[in-house]
Amino acid sequence: MTNKNFKSGFVAILGRPNVGKSTFMNHVMGQKIAIMSDKPQTTRNKIQGIYTTENEQIVFIDTPGIHKPHNALGDFMVQSAYSTLRECDVVLFMVAADEPRSTGENMIIERLKTAEVPVILVVNKIDKIHPDRLFEIITDYTSQMDFAEVVPISALAGNNTETLLQTLSDKLSVGPQYFPEDQITDHPERFLVSEMIREKILLLTREEVPHSIAVITDKMSRDEETGKIHIMATIIVERKSQKGIVLGKGGDMIRKIGKMARRDIEVMLGDKVYLETWVKVKNDWRDRKMDLADFGYKK
Ligand code: GDP
Ligand code: K
Ligand code: MG
Image (cartoon, protein in one colour):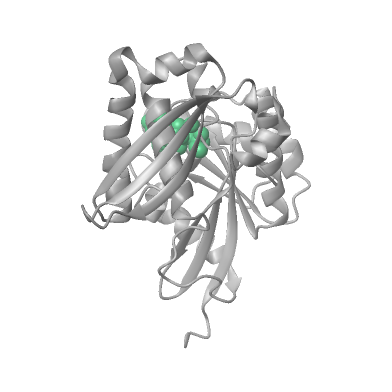
């Protein structure tokens, strides 16, 4: 590296579930690294999106939405979100413009007041409100805490996200390039494959099913005969009835999930994929620490 002024830093994205944290990170990265959905608790692990240009490397840490946990998995998620406060140089506190400040936000604000790094308030989803309301929304938050900066954006439409990147850049100091320029995330491909399958289940199923599933990619290797990447994945559910829902009538649902996931995985890998899925029941796995660790939710 020849650039003496090269800047770098870790940026944590924190906020309530569903405010658009993963959408923002993916928008900046220009590809899907963290899965997204309209369901809370879509993101369960910290996921780094590594954004590298000639002059800087910003390592975004997308986090699970902070909420009141109801089980061991929820505990893991909230702790994992807050743990990024110790690992970052800047915090993006994201809120949604179309929803009023809630007790959830107030709880996070109390915690952020003790942060030792600059906290930037990001008001997302401005495409959903009338511009006249923006000032009022911002002052409602700034009356609660002193933010280093305030940036309104639409992560979905890409409005003002360049300004946010520039604001972030200005906050970073000269530092090393932590990761090679072609590395985009800290998670292995197998994790991303599992997540893309989970995203389709979130999209296609309802009620308790989305929260009750875990996906593990057991095998991923090139099939010499077909030339395709052969992937074997296990979908874990908590109840027999949920297995029925995921499989669907005559296997309709699992075929649909597989087809949609395969398309995403092929784009990510840039290769043809043969995807094989299995559905297994593991009662109440979200309450068992042992199972959580097995399914990739470990500290
Ligand atoms: P997260 O839980 O904070 O990571 O939120 P997601 O990124 O999963 O997004 C939650 C939902 O909000 C999804 O349905 C997104 O499409 C939607 N969303 C995210 N950003 C925006 C935005 O700027 N405008 C609008 N209208 N919707 C958004
Ligand atoms: K979500
Ligand atoms: Mg998310």
